Amino acid sequence: MKLLVYCKDYAPLETGFAIAFRGFCEALADHHHDVAVTVVTPTPEISSGIAAPDMQVVPVVRLAHAFVESDPHASGWLRRITFAAASLLNRLIWSRRLTKLFRAGGYDLLVFESADDLLIVGALPKTVLARVAIRFHSTGDTETARYSQGSTRKLERWLIRQRVSRHVRVILATNRYHLDFIKTFYFADDPYRLARCYFGIVPNVINDVSLPVVSGTADTLIDPARVNLVTLGRMDRQGVAQKGFEDLFYALAIAPDDVRARINLVIVGDGPRRAALTALAQSLAPDCVRFAGRLDNSDVRKLLTMAEVIVLLSRFEGLSMFAIEGMLSQCAALFTRTGGIADLVSDNGWLVEVQSIDGIAQTLGEIVQTPRAALAAMGQNSRRYAQHHFGAQTVAVIGYRHLSNAILYLANV
Image (cartoon, rainbow, N blue to C red):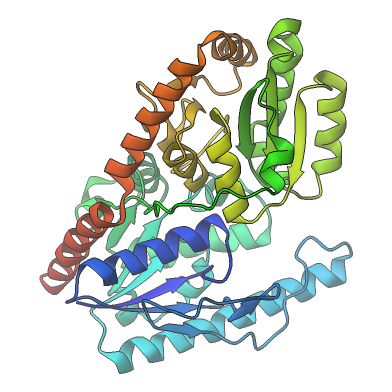
């Protein structure tokens, strides 16, 4: 099996996407020696001063940025137009490069890790689109693509209607929720259109790494006298709309004083809305919320190993890498009943309804009343679940079987 895999983010980046994409590609290569994976990515070898790892399990082709893409959030209409034009031109060039690589390399399948770069997919010739598989990962592939406004999103929706849903026949997703969403959004639940496609669920991989116990950022954020809760998310317009930070602050505000006094909430993340979120937290729950800012993934993992509870109160969510990392770190879980994360909680924590301020407040009270030993037992259940469902070997087997089926399916269409 010979795969060409496009990854929007890749090492040395430590984004959730980069970690998930690399984990899946390397798991396939590590556990199936008859699989040849080549990664193609626009992520430069040195990103933000961090060099890519010396040892690459899979070969990586790094696409050049022919046009400089400025900050998409920069003020001024000229800068936004310049960014949009550069972004479009780069993706047209990258689509052409992918086509050449795919045809010259004799690959069985061109796999897109997420549909976040639909311009590249849409610009592929039909003969290549017929050999494409997309693995849907995030809310950028689903809710954001469906409901966000703006010229870029409208173009992407046109590409979905005119190119992707007509020609791409292998649809994978990291969770059941995303797969169902794609069937409705991309294919309008049309049974005849769905019958032309191959569908499968291939979850994300989480590597069970042992982190050294050293003093650092995590120590300054953890309060051993309180129950430590950790949440994470981007603090831009989209991230704030999704992650439910405000719901958590309002729930803390209506919780009894003795509940707030026993909680230490650490929030990881940064963005243009951080100042507003900080002001809101200070006005509603001034003594129990700490903003950690942006942290490297290794620091996030260390922080989670020292906390008791991972919190993800998303209003919509897929299969969050942060959620899986927290479970692997032996945290009890407090998640909302939405998307892929709703399937992650059984005997390892609590589920609350989306935007249920009263429900969140009540659950926070239950958490602080839970004995430490019981919280630790929930954390152990979280870890067992994560190891069983998201280990590299497990996901490699699932991915191999679905990709083998997909290649056979396309050969017989």
